[in-house]
Length: 61
Image 1 (spheres, rainbow, N blue to C red):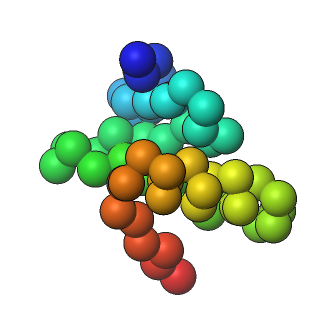
Image 2 (cartoon, rainbow, N blue to C red; image 1 turned 90 degrees about the vertical axis):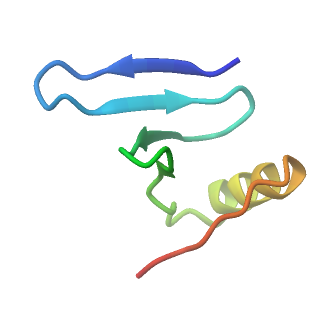
Image 3 (cartoon, helix red, strand yellow; image 1 turned 180 degrees about the horizontal axis):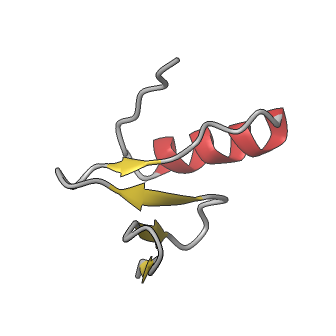
């Protein structure tokens, strides 16, 4: 079960998933945008979590 919250000041919608080390912002088209962590340890946990759940992802510059 995902946890959602709205930020009153900006109107941004955030979402967090159980076991995922980061929360993301829900975009209008339904995609979730997350900052790619600089920490190699957190990056590895995030990538492993996405692969485990079969979630396609891409890293943009």
